[in-house]
Length: 417
Image 1 (cartoon, helix red, strand yellow):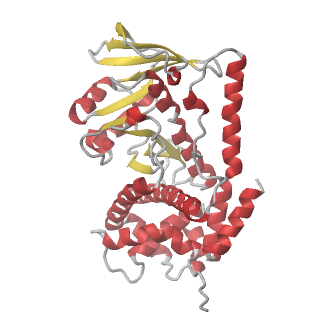
Image 2 (tube, one colour; image 1 turned 120 degrees about the vertical axis):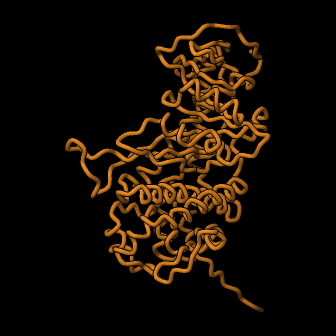
Image 3 (cartoon, one colour; image 1 turned 45 degrees about the vertical axis):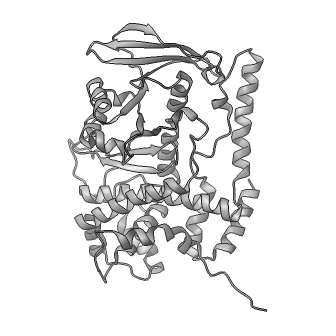
């Protein structure tokens, strides 16, 4: 009778999606001092260890790694244009792979079959230690990300330039084609953005050039002319709370839609603005509600991963950091899903808490005689990784523990919730 022992570690399983991507990259080059795969892995480790200082990261964790660079070599790799292109290619290809592996969070909305939907926004953190001061103050460093509302993968779109670049300046610099984010022809792309992303001329250009649409909130001082009320199915329970769906014309001559909605739970009134012409108003409301998922991911980056400060002063170093942050989020999502499918690991207590919140909202509305959209009460997957999972993966990588042993620990952690 033969006996087999599993030797897969959490380290090898977690980083496995990167191996082929780095090896196949057109930007990979031989580098004995710090091979490209080690460079990429170190970036992910630094994000997971929440080390604001590169020197501190090397000092505290360098002994764990087989090939740890010197201080000068490490910082020079962060400034390397070639390594930056390598990170960009691996970052993009990891997103494509993850989109196939991860569950589709919009699958229940049949009207979105021909759409890809993203929540995009800017995220700002502290300047690097050696950044110059302007009028005695260090300026925050900005990055712009896009969260795929289907796969929940995170993409770095651009790093802010100048002292405090405005959102619309960044969106125009990325250009309509860039905002499509490699979505193939034949599908529409809908970008959900806050009011800082409103520019009617640019919206019109994006729609005409590449079937790219926007969804936002109406600005307080916005002036427009009413054209007509649109027909919508009040009998569709997903449209609960919708009060109006109107075609309007801006002073610039751009035709848009305004969906008026009253939240049945809190009673707040909202007006949603979009140049998308066809989706039911309840779906428009739901997509904007899911914009909050991007904010939750930013909270994960800041408070669970501890990414609060720039790694370097150069644009290359800043972009390297942002791509490592996005890849870390995506690797966490891939590994969390793999553990659920292959190991039966799921945070059922967190699922129960979300289900309870939905049931309470439904009960309050029923008590007040109000209808509530089933899109609000439907139990969704967790928006961000739990702090228990982040701490578990961090410790498992430090210990270089076998996956079977680590998974048993995770089961215990979740059971104690």
